[in-house]
Image (cartoon, rainbow, N blue to C red; front, side, top):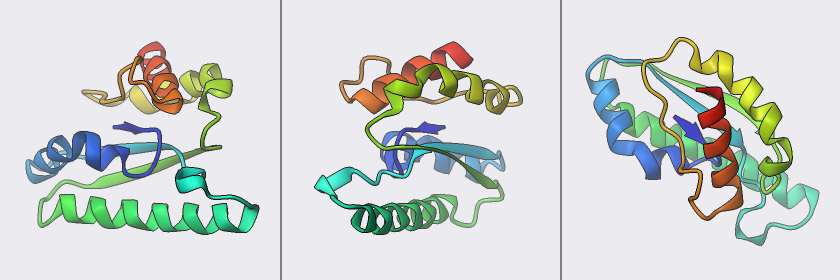
Length: 129
């Protein structure tokens, strides 16, 4: 699952993730940004706190989705700046290609989602896959 921001995987594909984990399948969540620009966070310290909180919340949500299922969740963090994924779209596609090489399915935002980071992730996922 390609998540532009922490929570996009749970909100966009939580049911698919929970089902895969319950069936014993592994799930790789690739988080492109830490979502540090959400809610109008300003200043380096405020963004760092928000990024840490969102990473923690993402891991907590994934633990809930995993439940007692035998599947394992792997989280990969790309570390691009929230709001600037489009600037790095080509590099993101290159980085995603090896992460997609050993998977059976890729879930990603639609290329015309309407949010710039989501759109760029969708295009990069399409190119990489």
